[in-house]
Amino acid sequence: MKFLTLVEIYLRQVRFYILTTLFYLLFFPIALILNLPSQNTLVGTLTLYIFLDGFLSISQQISFMKTEQQLTLLYVSGSPKWLTALSLAFITLIISIPLVVLIMVISRTAVLFSINWVYLMATLVLSLITSIILGMDLGLGLGQRQVNQLSQVLGLGLSFFAPTFVPYSVLPLYLQLPSLVEPTTYVAQALRYDLQGSFSWEWNAGVMIFLVIGILIYLRVSRRP
Image (tube, rainbow, N blue to C red; front, side, top):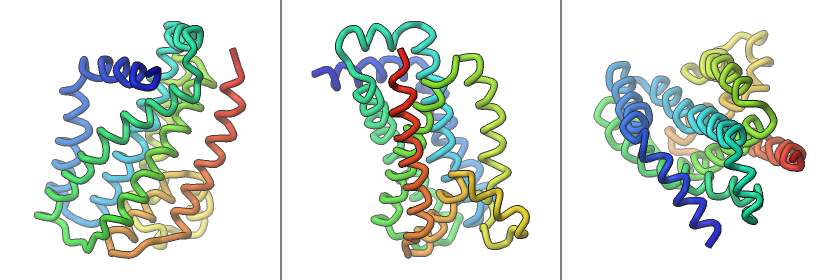
């Protein structure tokens, strides 16, 4: 019952900015892909959609709830922090998965790819959960003002200083090595394989490593009062 209550609370918050959400999560990605029709554009857009949006929005939402004492009220009422994370992950998944499918279907009119839906869903779910956990870490570990300021820097860094819109293989060596510390690098390269009908265990394993790191950080920051 507590899980469903948390889901209802977050859904009520979402409804106030549903139009803005639909624009940035659906219309903007489709417009970008259709106006710049290439597999690189599709991969880069999906990477930002799947990972970056969840990471930044969750971190900002958690830091806001912490600042407004909403998290404290939830904890006092008996809702553990892990249940808050689980409910946020559930909502993000049920919103994002149908929209990703819709984006992929519409993109077929402009971009040629040979997709394996099972592989794509595996990468999608793994990447979304990783972004949610890392977003929780940032939101719980820092204050709202710090999160808002850092989000702008991380948005640019994870978008354009990682091989999201270009393949990792075309980067010079002095850029390949630093890009390996960015989770969006692994998400993007895994998606490239998915769109070619194959599955990259190596790149998805990289995403899994970031998930484990995120869980370890969460276990540490969640102990804070």
